[in-house]
Amino acid sequence: MEKDKKKKAIVMLSGGLDSSLALKMVTDQGIDVLALHFTSSFCRCDGANACGSTARKVSGFVGTELKIVRVGQDYLDLIRNPKHGYGKNMNPCIDCRIHKFKYARKMMNEIGASFIVTGEVLGQRPMSQHKRAMMIIEKESGLERLIVRPLSAKIMAPTIPEENGWIDREKLLAFHGRNRTPQIKLAEDLGINDYPCPAGGCLLTDSAFSRRLKDLIEYGTLDINNAELLKVGRHLRITPDFKFVIGRNEKENDILTVLAQEDDIVFEPKEDVSGPTGLGRGKWDEKMMNIAANAMARYIKSDTDEIEIEVGKKSDPKKTVILAKKMEDNEIKKMMLV
Ligand code: SF4
Image 1 (cartoon, rainbow, N blue to C red):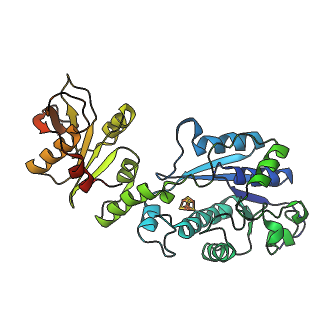
Image 2: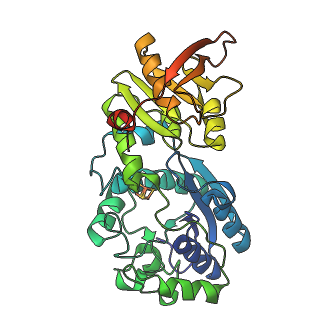
C-alpha cells in the first residue's frame, strides 16, 4: 500500500447531521471526496426538507461532487427477506447497510477511490451502529478496515487509511452513544447549520408503515408503486386479492390519482359532493366495489346516508355510479391496516 499520500474517498452522505460533519472533517483534511447519497421509496423526508436536497446543500457548502442513487428492485428483494433480520419494525438495517456499502465499493473501484467514510457514531443506533454489526457490515460488503468513521474513529481500531496516513487519525474524534450535544457543538464550530433531516428519517422504522408493508409482503405485492402508495391515505385490506386506499386530504387525493395504474379502479364522489379519492387495486367484483364505496362514503361530509360515487378505470371516461351507504367505524376498523 502506498503510504502517507492523501487519497480519494467516498463519503456516504445521508443529509443528516452526522454524515455532514464527517464530510466536512474529511474535506478539511484536503482529501478529494465524492459524496454518495441514497434515496428510496422509504425515505421519510420530502418537499423542501428532502434529505436529497440537504445532501445537495451540504455538498455544495463543502464543495464536493455529489452522486445521488435511487435504490431499486434489488432493495425490495432485500426487504422481503433480509439475511440479518429486521430491527424493531421492518427495518433491515444490517442488510440495508451492506447493500449500500457494496454499491459504494463498486463505485470506489470505478472512480479510483481508496476508502469509504461514514458519519456513523459507535453505539448511536441499536441495530447497525454497534461494533459487532459494524464488523459484519464491513466484512460482507468487502470493505474490511476500509471504512473510516471520523466521529468515533479514536475509540475504534485504526483502519488501513489511518495506518497509511491517507487520513490523519489525530484529527478524528471519539464520540459515542446517543447524546447528540457534541455533534451540535461541532456543527457550530464547522459552520454547518442546515441539517433538517433528522437521523433515522426512514419509514421502515415506523410501526404503522411497517404494518402496511408487512401486508404487501404477505400478499406478494411488494413493488415500487405499491411501496409509494403506502405513504398516502388510509389502507384497507378488503380481500387477499383486493386492497383499497382512501385519500385523507387534497394532496393525498392528487397523489392517488397519479399513482393509479391502468388496471386500478378510481373512486370519486359525484361532481356536486366534495370528498376523498379512493383507489382500488387487485381483483374485484361488484361486492368488493360496494364494500370499498361504502367505506369511502364514511369519509364524505354529507347530510344523507346514501352518496353517489363514480367508479371506473383512470383512463376510461366511462364510469359506473354506485349508491354507497356510509359504513360503520367498527366495520372499517376490521379492514384497516394501521
Ligand atoms: S434506518 Fe432505514 S435507511 Fe437506515 S439503515 Fe435502517 S433500513 Fe437502512
